[in-house]
Length: 157
Image (cartoon, helix red, strand yellow):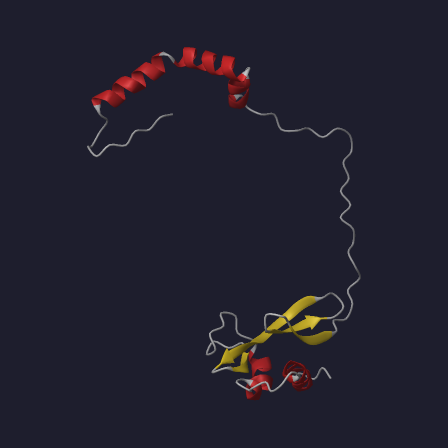
């Protein structure tokens, strides 16, 4: 349907005339549309039937892998995120923080509201890692040392 919006309240005289012409000639317009589309216009307007299953349909979603005891490991991603990952399933368990550059130095920022994180780390984990918040990473081995220290403080090593 054509909807014409004007600045005045109510429809314009031309709009009413156009709607009346379209309404009076609806059958001709439909016949022309069917001729041009090979019947596709009316077919698209017809209600569609829902597909009916034939025979017995079985969906076997499987039982999944047996639940293994998680084996947490601290990882530092290429974009500087410090995360706790289950080594068995490679799923992230906790986002601990990230490595940020402050005044030209790489610094560990713990995932807290004060550091601008929307989803802060649990209070228990934050208590264990609070001393590492703001520590400077020195040299090329700084990331490995940070991961080892975080793992040690969380009792993973």
